Length: 191
Length: 191
DNA sequence: GTCTATAGTTTGATAGAC
DNA sequence: GTCTATCAAACTATAGAC
Image: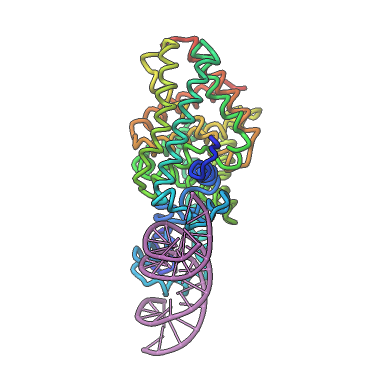
């Protein structure tokens, strides 16, 4: 992700700051300081702040695609792959405690702003949804695969929101354990 | 909630706007227009914007307390009371689809801003958490009552987040049904 | 490609007339 | 208690020198 060009460095810095502070709260001053350039230089690379947002969303979209492809190589069973999803919460637990879920918090913020890019942000949610749905289908739950995908996605969102609010990493651990058991139960008992 | 005094009208308008637009995004201009006063008159009632936020949080806290007390009168069984919590998602499904959960979205925003009132906002979460915990204790799950309370709270948060992102009311209905079944299972099988 | 300087707007907040 | 007028600061965005 960390390119040598200034444009890539701007996108990477904006990506992190949008996560930590939110989109609106992050000013050009914040990003410029993080990258080490002045505010004026900014507009050579991006004409509008919204263009940086779109670049960040595109970057996250690609990163998510790559991650999902990686999970497919980790395990041959849909159950194992679904556990990769649950494990993601554990791997990122420190960041989640500090800033919540990057997908959910951006989606919620852009929805409240009624921002044109809100749909782009939601496509990352859809990426997870479609991937999860396929795993449940492969597990023999073609009848309710989408419901199960949405259920699991919702649980991960709830865990991130509360872990963030209560600054509680241990809660993530407990819920991921319950989540793994639920995945196992759903995958072994076909609908 | 709707008092005749200007102060009450400001708090009510700010309450709605903080929910719909978020705290930062809501300007004094927004609130003044909603109430029908000028920006200048504002500072007679509140010295700082943060004071309005605290008043809104206090108002929501009281409203939540009253709602929880009401639920205790609706049913004598902890199972029935817990179903009131699930039913809350159904009752407010239109607003949730449009703006998410008022508790979760405010808590997340104030956390990102690192705002002093973020702890006050979290106390509303705690109100639910403690109430839910007591219901699970009354249902004979004193061993894991807090875990169950947090689990249910997290699920409601996740449902609200995704229903908001995907603009999907039907998803709320499906999840509330699953939630009721889960409550029934947990309450009948003591730990 | 990067800089300085600055325009133009909006914001939260204040002072003082009525 | 409500108003007008205004301040100081922050923001996005632009223009032009180097």
